[in-house]
Length: 189
Image (cartoon, one colour):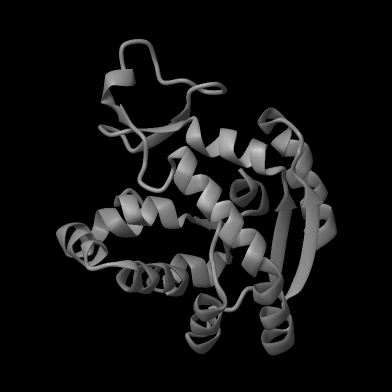
């Protein structure tokens, strides 16, 4: 939603890992093989996507990445440093609910949310929870995020001049237009 409002490419590591991003569809079997080879390959695919012509031309927004200082170092070395780090502050419980209720409709690659945007009647049996989106996995990711975000933002600010904007993300998902408008004003778009 934010990427559309701001006219940026949306880079989603979960989609890349699932093989449903545009890049994944273009690279097909080779990309699936690389993802099976582990996190290092996923990192390569994310960086490849950030260097894609569409990202270079329009700019990009990426969610939940980098997840640690090592990945931030790699972004910097590869010339993929963000200009702005947007921190959307949300309680851990809301993050858990927003992620664990998502489901992937396998035939189309569309992501639904069981509470806010459920799959069409009769289609739920074609849906699966994406890897890394179980409650246990989400809580682990939240803890890792809370432990590392200050280090990541400090590194990007010192080494790349990345500025940081913090916004309140506690609003219900249906109010994201207000959040994206507020963000666009802060960025100056």
